[in-house]
Length: 96
Image 1 (cartoon, rainbow, N blue to C red):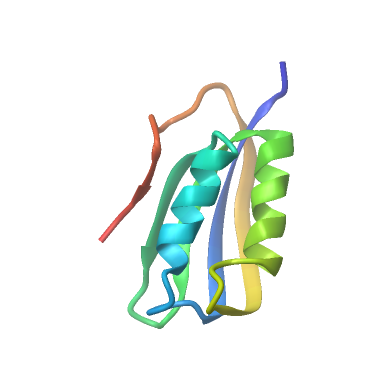
Image 2: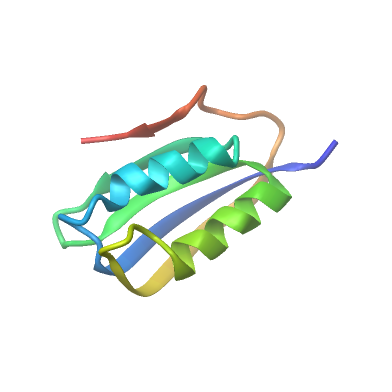
């Protein structure tokens, strides 16, 4: 069994108005991760992902390099990465 990790993220670039949240939620679900995503007031997208270390690393790479088809990712900040004893969410959701 893989260890579970949690990490916060914030994505900078052209990430609002390009379905970034929708694609992030879809990719998180595809990787069987839990967490959330939302737009910020400063034109970034932020959230938290939780799950097995390998899947979280795949999602981090996706956030850095892929995003939604019309997005432009300039940089991603990851913070508060830590091992967790259990998942704190039941699904991957979009917050408003």
